Image (cartoon, rainbow, N blue to C red; front, side):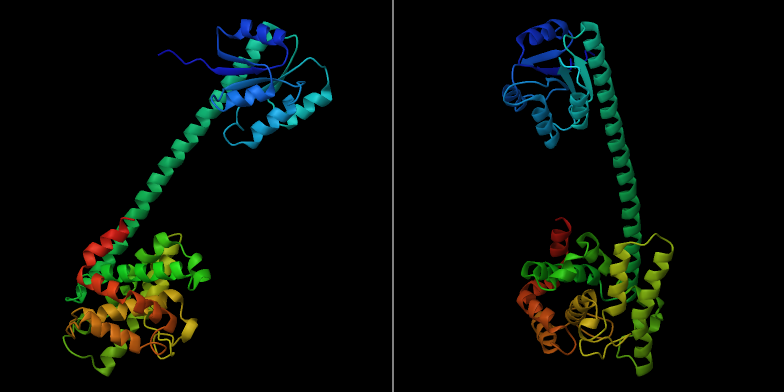
Amino acid sequence: MIQERATIMMVDDDMTTLTMGKNILQTKYKLYTVPSGAKFFELLDKIIPDLILLDIIMPAIDGFEVIKRLKSDRKTADIPVIFLTARNDVDHELEGLSLGAIDYVSKPFSPSLLVKRIENHLLIEAQRKELRHYNERLQDMVNDQTKQIADLQYAVLSAVAELVEFREQKIGGHIGRIQSYLKLMVDALISEKIYFDEISAWNMDFLIPSSQLHDVGKALIPEHIVQKPGKLTVEEFEEMKKHAAFGVWVVERITQHTKGHVFLDHAKIFAGTHHERWDGTGYPEGLKGEEIPLQGRLMAIADVYDALIADRPYKVAISAAEAEKIILAGKGIQFDPVLVDVFQGLASQFANIAAFPDLLLSSFLSE
């Protein structure tokens, strides 16, 4: 395979120097000789060289100004620059090196020395590029492995959530619908800049998926209570209420065996606070108003709405219109009044999710 020749630009206002450089370099490199800084920048708009040979003392735009502009532009900042100088001036050399030059060659230059300097710096640049590419490939491999692990963990947690759902017999699709309701409300809050400071701190890649674990604590509730076809007794209801605290415990147990993740942080809040009420009469902590984390206040509306429109072992579904009335009636009592207003504007879309959950969920998960 024939290796492509490196591209070099020689910038100098002295035609003798340009002619000498051309005679020395044009057989080995793709060489462009440029008589001024202004012409150089015109050419640079069309061609990016592998190395630049740059005179210092030039009219209008001198070599120092040229390299300053090069280093200030991300496209050209990494191009190696070798200064050409007819002066034996330490101060000039120090200034040039401080501006980012990699070397100096004195004029009139020795052909063999010039070629060797160029070869050495092109080799160093090639090795630097190869190292950068290697690091990028290595990072891609690490990212791929990390994603595979994260996908596996997510799949396991999703399966756990589905197993909990299946224990309740008639509530298939609850998890998918919940995610769709939450996505609608969160998007509306962002669009209307409601609770904006709090929401802007959330990582949206993990917020909605973490809601799957909101009822994970039900895995620890006796099956005869979870699947009871009628109304629970007072004692059974007290046992059922424990699922919120159990959910927090389950998520904390998962966290103990991993490094911790924002996904689990959200999941813990969803699990522990989705049965709190705005008026402070909910469980397990009896939190009131904005003491309840926003995730829990959102989930409270989504969870109750879905419980109303879906069949459960202990009840039959009611219509979306009836469910909407119940949510609105809970404004400022069971639910955050601001979120109820948001829900009211989205009620028709909630009803569509209830009717076609698979279609709506797949549409937002593919975004």
